[in-house]
Image (tube, helix red, strand yellow):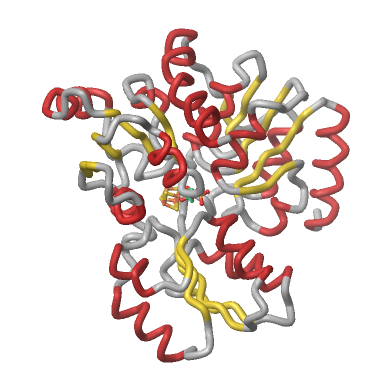
Length: 305
Ligand code: 13P
Ligand code: SF4
């Protein structure tokens, strides 16, 4: 089957079977084309709360499908590629954070949304990269324990110096691998380009950037800018999507290594199998996990607007 034929079949079946397809912006172009909604983690979680269809297919990684399930527990939620996890989300478990919390009594525990549902059950509020600064600012408590990404946490701490923000050693292995030397080389190679990076990158890389923000933030900045060249410091799919959307501009990946194998694991055929009712993995969670974990997602939506 040709790509277009697979896409047409997916579109036909999802309509026939009352399915909504959500896709994170790191997904491949041909998947974004058949999705009902695409965006960064924050936009997807807001969308998940208002989906009307009885089945939702998440093209992204496991914690994103779990978020959809928590926000729409009555729906059938399917992760299109069951192997697609997020190494950062799996770095810290409930037992570990329970013991860390004992050392930080009275702190508000802020969890990056890239965490498991189980871990969320013992956290106070979630943030995404696009909402983190706004939400941490809105928390009354000056003492914050920020998990698991120390790079995003350091970025937030830099924006809100009045808060006492404690960090742990966790993060995204894909973004954290980019070095300052690579960023300096990219800037030297493209002196007229703006450097746009995700705050999951190391603080030294973020400091060198002209803009730091979520995947959607980076895309919006590049689209709205009157500049013509951009170095993109996030998963390389974003440079690719931008190049399609703005052919008159030039987008250079900050590093050829900025590829998330988990985000790249989903194929169009995986999605086809899901709409046929054959593939993917249905996300199942106990009512207790859903009600405990969703509290910090609800809090994020309440504080994030
Ligand atoms: P955002 O969608 O918040 O930009 O996060 C990027 C990411 O790494 C998702 O896994
Ligand atoms: Fe996880 Fe990083 Fe991949 Fe996002 S890019 S899914 S944070 S490993």
